[in-house]
Image 1 (cartoon, rainbow, N blue to C red):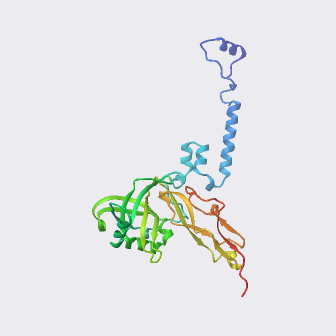
Image 2: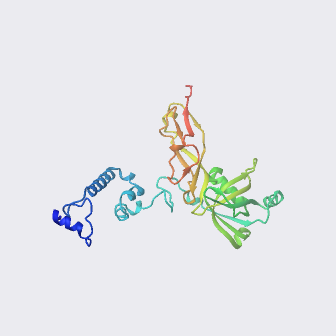
Length: 305
């Protein structure tokens, strides 16, 4: 119950009593105008969030407006992982590496480099290689000279294709002796960075690997896989399909390197094109091209026979 006028005056003159707060409600059950305004804003935000589609209620958005306990009660365990925060994982509907292609690449250390050393290694059935680190998209040090088996690299490149081989993670084991014998010097996850093939025989001449720990950000030319071409209106109308880009460069967290990116052509009509921004990828991947760069289009039409 509020103080009367004389009591309020006596209250202010007594040095042992704390001063009355400003905007004090006349009744303990009533809120101040400021409290009422804050409550109204909270209710409006809550109403707006509830009206939004469930798939748009991301964790950062919920955490911005609600307490941690409220978010935990509202979000299911399957939704509790933020795709933009580590640890990363592949999202449903996005391509992921096929486990049947998992293979351990065996290597041995190489003492020196040079043309004569490389020729000697190739003659012995090995490919000169190097493994180094690339943290945050920048090439770093910690380089190690190694040699890998030529027949193993040739088999992987032939089976996967060169572009797909360069966008896939492998386990690399460096042993003190050949054929995985002796002492294990290093066991690490790597990404093939470059592979140089003979122009006439496609035999691997040299190869570069990047170490790919979970903390690494890797610059990768991800292959584009075009699908739905037969169902596209442009093809049905006799248009020509032009491929402008076959890969797209992204900065990728090492745990979610895409083996390829699907490009759906099923709705592409004559005169239309797809741009880099149209690619559907994991939100943690950063495009290193201009988003307006074209990927493909349908142009012209075939003359009737």
